[in-house]
Image (tube, rainbow, N blue to C red):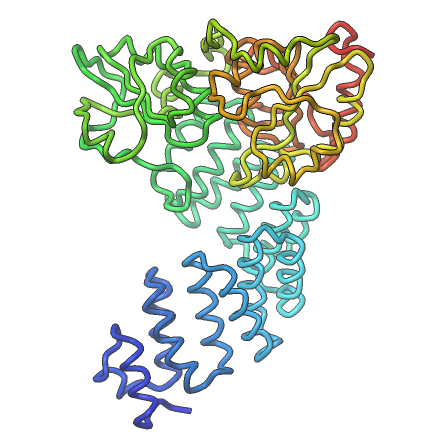
Length: 511
């Protein structure tokens, strides 16, 4: 049905100020949908939604327009409403594979991996020789840590289209997860030939190279994060230039904590070296971190990351914390690993001191990281799985999991854990609590970095394809001498990890 009747044209003109009545007079439904699609591709989500809403007033069951509306809502991060529209599109046109692909994308965003897998599988069933759909299905398998399951789909995708760049990138991620690093790097390089200068490909390649131990090459590739709009890296709102390693006598450098707390805890060790190049190093961070991070050698002051604090300062340069190893030329062999480089308060918080007055070996446990982390589902362990460790004879088990929400989500109530940190404590109090323990057992989260920075014995429970900083195939860490690593032998196999911890040397953990 063309939008050539007076009511239809008026509806478009009224609801779409970006279209205008003059253009609307000329548009059919199909042409209007194409215009909405162009808006969508250019990131103009409101404009696309406005046109789609106008069309759907006239033809409420038009599948392609419902699909465009769902895609624009997805890109605008309104996943609940996007899901409603894609379901309407599928109901109107149930044999369209592209719509199932979009549904999979939406479900991924709300962490419904089973639903995403089902939708992507249906898309491939409808179009079994589509390289894009096969690659997307493999990528969902990767997100589920079903790495070996992903490989046949990727081979099929590349058989359909040997020059399909996304399939080469996903293949690189999958092979890196399986520690097949030479093959992985070849895939990333092939992706770059086919689609040059894609930031996502370079970031993924950098993470794989660092995990393989090629730290400098990996760090160079990882710098592409600044060009990837969807990556979590943020630039500080300051006018100063970025520091590249030059001497700045009398200068003041902003040390920018660009990403998560664990990253900052790991890389603040470079502040002392940075301080050799200027007269003042100012580190950004939340106020809960100030007392602890300000003890790092080289940190002169700390400020918050809000605009007002940064506007009050005039800096001569700024530098991202995670770029310092690259600027310094760090290799695996030259990582500055002198610990401790952070210092807990001289006086322990009275609540912590009282709670530490117990018999037995004092062991602290943390089982989940930041829920916003992309792969938190893989690096976190169900709290109840720790029971064989928390109930061992001779062990007094303390909870190091601070957030109430994550405690409840992982059923910590089933464990016999004692509280340790005060509810109103900051990161320095957390460090003081860890310092009073005999051992810390944790997944890959900020607790591990605090313990490592303090030189505290710490056993880290790692997923099968762990983060780049823990490398692969080793049970120690060049970043933290006091850390011991326990790795999943297969994806999702936490039982074997717990058994390995129980079998650890008797002097470390009572039998």
